[in-house]
Amino acid sequence: MSAINPRTRLGLEILGVAAGAGLAGDTLLRAMPWGLNVMLCTCVLVGGGVWLVRRHHLQPGPDAPWLAITALLLGAAFLRRDAAVLTRFDMLALFITLCLAASSLQGERIGGWRLLDYLRAGVTATAGSIAGGMLLVGRDVQWQELPREGRLRNVRAILVGLLVAAPLLVIFAALFSSADQVFGNVLTNLFAFDITSLVSHTMLFCFWAVITAGYLRWSLLGQPVAMPYGASNVRLGLVPMATALGLLNALFLLFVVVQLRYFFGGAALVQVTTGLRYAEYARQGFFQLVTASALVLPVLLGADFLVRGGTTVEIQTFRRLAALLLILLAVIMASAFERMRLYVDAFGLSEIRLYATAFMLLLLGVFAWFTWTLLRGRRERFALGVLMQGFGILAALHVMNPDAFIVKTNLNRPVAERPFDAEYALTLGADAVPALIEALPQFGAGDRRVVVCGLVSRWNKDDADWRTWNWSRARARRLVSHDAAVLRQTCTAAIKEMHHDH
Image 1 (cartoon, helix red, strand yellow):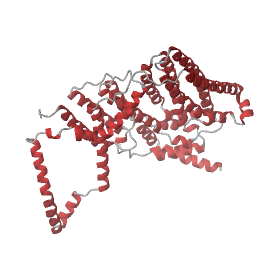
Image 2 (cartoon, helix red, strand yellow):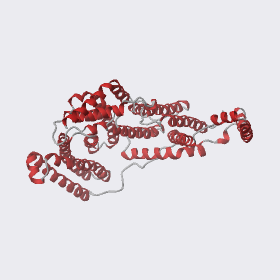
Image 3 (cartoon, helix red, strand yellow):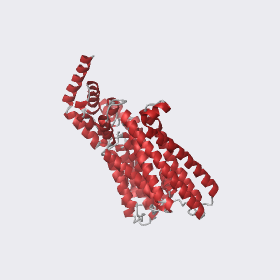
Image 4 (cartoon, one colour):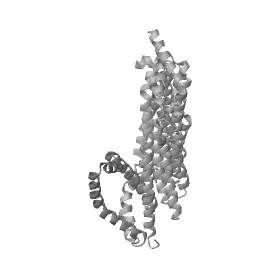
C-alpha cells in the first residue's frame, strides 16, 4: 500500500466513511419523526471527518473545532424539543453549519467573511456534495495504483469463482427443489425477500453514501472558490443615492406619523377612521410590517455596496440617510410589536405569530449590528455577527420551549375575541402535553373532553421506534400512560356533562 498516492488513499477512506454513513442513514433516518437518529448520524459524519483529518494530518481553518461542536449540539437538539417549526429551523442551522465546516476544512477563516462568502459557501458545498461522489470515484481515486497481488488478488479470485458458480447453483438448486418439496420450502424461506423493501433500502443507502462522499470530498480534497475583493467599479453617485434614500425616508416618516396618530388615538379613532375593531386593525398589518422591515436590509446593503470606495461626501451622506431610515424603522418595528401584542391579546398566540415575532427580534438585532458595524466602517464584522445572532435566537427558542409557551400564553390570556382553542393546542408537539395536563381542571366540559380524548388517542401508545426517541415525546407518553385510566374517566365524565347540559 506504500505505492498508493496520498490523494488516492484519502479518497478510498472517504469512500469507506461514506459507506458507513450510507448504512447509518438507511438504517436510522428512515424512521420518523426524527430524534435520536439525527444525533447518531451527525456523530457519524462529524466523527468520520475528524478521523480523516487526524489520520491524514490535514490543516483545517481555526473555526473547524467550534463548527464541529455546533453541529453536534444541533444534532442533540433533536433529542430535546418536539416542535415541528423549531425542528425545521434546527435542520436549516445544521445545514448552514455543515456548509461553513466544509469551507473551514479547506483552510478558510470565517471570521472576516462578507455576506456573499456565506452564500458562496452554501452553494459550493451543496454542489460539491451532489457531484463530488462522481469526481471522487472517477478522478480523485487512481484505481490503477491499487496493488494487484496479495489480498486483493484473492478477493478478485473469489469474485470470479462466485460468477462461475452462480449459474451452476441456480440449476442444481432448481433440480433439488423439484425432487424434494421440503428442500424447496427451505430454499424459498431462505431467499424470500420483498423487492420493494430491497429497492427502498438500496436507494436510501446510495443517497446518503453519495451525499456524504461528495461532502467529504469537497471538504477535504476541494479548493475554495475565490471571489474578487476590493472596491466595486459600480457607482450610484451622490445625487441618485441621496434622492432614493431621501424619498424612502419621507415615505417612512409619513407612515410613522400616521402610526403614532392611531396608536395614541386609541380604539375609538381606529373605529371611526377605518371601521375596524382595534384587534382587527392590529391583525391586518403585522405581517406586512415584518416584510417591509426585512426588505430594508437588502436595500441598505445594496446602497452600502454602491457607495463603497466612494468619496467622503458620498459615504457620509449615505451614513446619515441610512441612520435616519433606521431610526424611522425602529418606530415602525415598535408599531409592529404593539400590533402583535394586541393581536395575541384578542386572538391568542400561534406558531406563526410566535416565530414571526422571533424573526422581528432577529431583525432588530441585525439592524442594531448594522448600525454598529457598517455605518462605522467595520464591514468585516457584520456577517459573522448576523450569524451569531441567528444561532442566539434559535438557542433562545429552545430555552423558551415554544409549544409549551403557546399553550400557557393562551391559557393565561383574558378571553376576549376568541376563547382557548383546544383543538389547535392538540396539534402542537409533545412539549405542549405537560401544560395541557396541568391545565385540565380549569377547562370547561367541552374543552376538557377534546383535550383528554386527544391526548389519550395520540400519546397513550407504546409503539415508538427507538430511532425516533426524543425526550419530550417520551415524557408525553409517560405522563399520558401513567394517568391513562384517570384521563379516560375524565373524558367520559366530560361527555356526560356535555349531554346533561344539552
